[in-house]
Image (cartoon, rainbow, N blue to C red):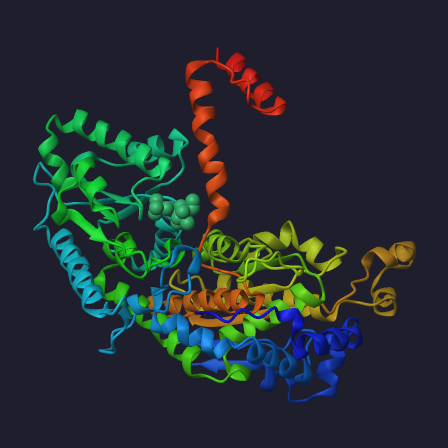
Length: 544
Ligand code: F6P
């Protein structure tokens, strides 16, 4: 079980409050001037990574107090509980074992007294076999053509992980394999995918842990209907549909035979599930070996997370710095600025990971929290953001901590482009940190422009982390993703909330049924509120 400690009652929290009063207005440049070893102390290198935390409004003392906070909140016990498979998702009475999916060791992990490692291994062997069959052509479509289109039908954690990773690893796509994703219930998503594929060469993957999610099941049924209309025989479904689910009965009832069903267990949280069968679309797109590399990379970060003391532990430090800003500087959002074009879907993936996990306001004892928990995660890839929202980062009224994620090498071969990309990112972090005061601005503006000096000054001291990656290989991507997963976990532990349930999504889901009925039957329901009634009335008029 996780400890139930209100972080605001700890000694470290109280000391951090006082420490914040002293450092609230600290200038990061001055912190560098005061400490020639600051970069070395605040940056952490691994084989293919450099995590630079030095451009933060933080001193040695800040980090000491933050790690004290982690100790007082019994983070070590919580990490232990997570990795050992204790049922830390208490409101659903489930263990949380995405880390076990990428653990290739023989170490036993028990859930309800049963070692789950053999189950994981067996399922991995099935995924590998499926890849081998599809890629070799021993599993072909009903007309004998090779499978070329992999169509993932799923939403949330059954979509975002696979679509983000396949996009991130685009240079590793196998020849003659193309992944597609149908997630939105908006039929345009489905139609646009169907337009680009050929049923005879398509494998549809119905990815749904529950097999009850309205969007996924509706999309899957429509695709199934289109497929049967095309091939004129239901028996061909078995060559073209597989399921990833924990609900075998419903998948069978849909028409998918048991041998085509890959398992996701209740101890795998949907938003952290890409490491197991939920990653089949990834494995089919980049090949099983690269998929295993992704898992290996994540596993190396798990080991770092488990074994490294807090003051050198990368995800722990990321979480603590984030807490420092959220709870002491009252920051309300974090920007994730991945400069690698292939990481364009990273922020959407992270939004679910962070906001579905830590967007909670009731603590682990059932009390309402009186401190901020999860914040909004947003961002954009590449230099595009510089030409839109970076204005707010530089001169807006509030601090938005940013993660800059940079990849040094790339596969497109346009060397000049990448050097400019890197230079731009570095310039942004420098500008955010240094700013430009009135005197410096006066020196650079033209005489005629002197009245505009106030508009051209920059406060500076805006905190950033820089994550420098040698190249975006499967392994390195695994490291990066596991790092953010653990950051999210650590934050949840310290905020004393349950990070692995998602009750907040249920209310709206439940209410949609009666709206659907009203729209379908063109009839209002008296119990609807005024606004909903007004909107439905207008929908019916527009739809006439
Ligand atoms: O509605 C939220 C959610 O339950 C997510 O947590 C989950 O990833 C997604 O829906 C999809 O659920 P399923 O895999 O059961 O279709």
